[in-house]
Image 1: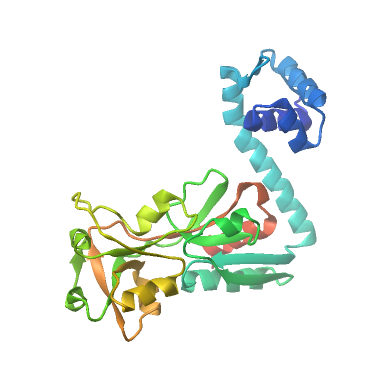
Image 2 (image 1 turned 180 degrees about the vertical axis):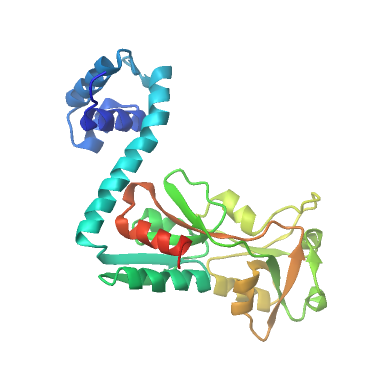
Length: 295
């Protein structure tokens, strides 16, 4: 097989995503006929059909599916290598917008510091994410990357470095009977309303931050749905329920009317860096490296 033209591969990958010649052409700023021509040329090089075309649908052949699985990572690596080379030639410059949920911990702030030392030509902005919309600002291009509570199961987002896991605690009003306990179990969550979040956050994420059943299957009462951590703490202080927080966040947000009690039997809390798959930049990759390897 002769050498594959990069345009042929890009047309194939775009068509595999869109399964529509017109939309693939719009994505690549090419005509529909040009996309079809590039696909035929690639199939000629391969020696077999990669795409099945009918008047009603477009789909990959089994060979096309195999090529997609093997070519996508190679193409992404090539694009990243070229971007890194360009960044290396001009330096990482411009502006990096990093968002966080709750409070940026020491690892995040150290990464910001290291990033600034490594790339003095790039300004860093730090903003807070709404608790009820952890992925929206990244999708709307309001920030370049965000440190969010896991889990993350969004197809359009890349999950980069994951920060160290932290045990979970339950924030409670100091007047609550549980406030004097040395520790709670996950089953104890069935005995008080649990404050969660509304908004556009996906349901699986909401359930991870405020489970609706205990590991033993007992229903957990639902408390108020809040938009920010500060709203959540205000609801806790007012005695409207408890709120699950990782230990560092609970310690940082401690106040006179709110205490936190460790909870056993729950998966630990963890944070991860996410960015949009279609807007990955040298700046984002450099910050991810600083977060993963700050030394």
